[in-house]
Image (tube, rainbow, N blue to C red):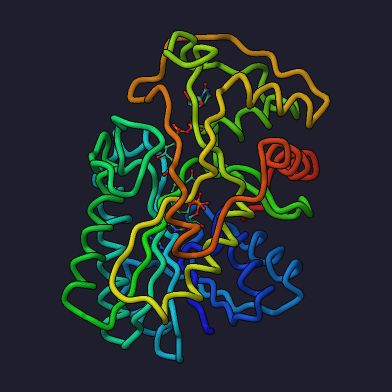
Length: 337
Ligand code: NAD
Ligand code: WQD
């Protein structure tokens, strides 16, 4: 297939491009480099052994999208979004513009070009504060911040378009907590500024870029009092995207699928696993809870197995080992111009 990967220069997109190329697909990366980098694209090419096309462009530009969609694209994977919950609370309009308007433009461009297959990056954030764990796709959807709203609205827009165009197929992949890196150590997660997420923060403490970790809350009703999440290896996510995009032609309509391991891991369990993987101490202090955090959240991933034949292969140990290999080889992340 010829696949347009919007946001393919970013963390999850870059790993997915490598996996798509390994399956023999033709990949076109489309990214405005607001958070991705050309260095990542070069490394994707190196890992793939193929000269993958890269177009610098913004999903809010209908003109740029028309250009890349004009040339026989079979499917689109839409990763392009802003993704910081805290930033979305201070800059909601930027999130609505990028994530919602960007999705509308992409759908318009696909509709105009007759491209009918879409895989969309959604998030477990659409479940808000879950009433029940593990979380099933049929759980109540709710919004707790503007980032979450942008994902929920984008899901609805895609669902409505599938309702109106019977030949339009979309899979909404709801990721839980993506972590880890390609086992080569060549590509990985490279947050700009201070990491908001646990795993990149822990890796930067281990490599000496930050003195210690603040553990947000030690008094949750969880086994050790710290927050519990479903961490999922980015290589597993990449594999799920390949399966989802390959299956689009034989599916119809719009379906939402959870991508998680189905196992909850606490902050302190993850810290200990990272200490073992890295051989470094991770000093930490337990501080107040972070506003908006939930105690525990993990997936029921059974639908992914039923529909895509996918289930997670990697455990926490591999997640930490691979994140550490990437961090150690690239202590300051990618080269950015
Ligand atoms: P990322 O920031 O590394 O990748 C997103 C890429 O999209 C970046 O390369 C960025 O430059 C690009 N981009 C952003 N806005 C764009 C625009 N308007 N036009 C073109 N390119 C644009 O993020 P990621 O972690 O790889 O996340 C990928 C997707 O998965 C996002 O949609 C995110 O919301 C979703 N998601 C991420 C997580 C997570 O924790 N990483 C969890 C759930 C869902
Ligand atoms: C994990 C656990 C924190 C940092 C977020 C988004 C979600 C999705 C994935 C995009 C929690 C604790 C964290 C730190 C800590 N993104 N923690 N110290 O909050 O589950 O999910 O990323 O869609 O929408 O909300 O992930 O990695 O930030 O936190 O103690 O410095 O680690 O309290 O229990 P979260 P996280």
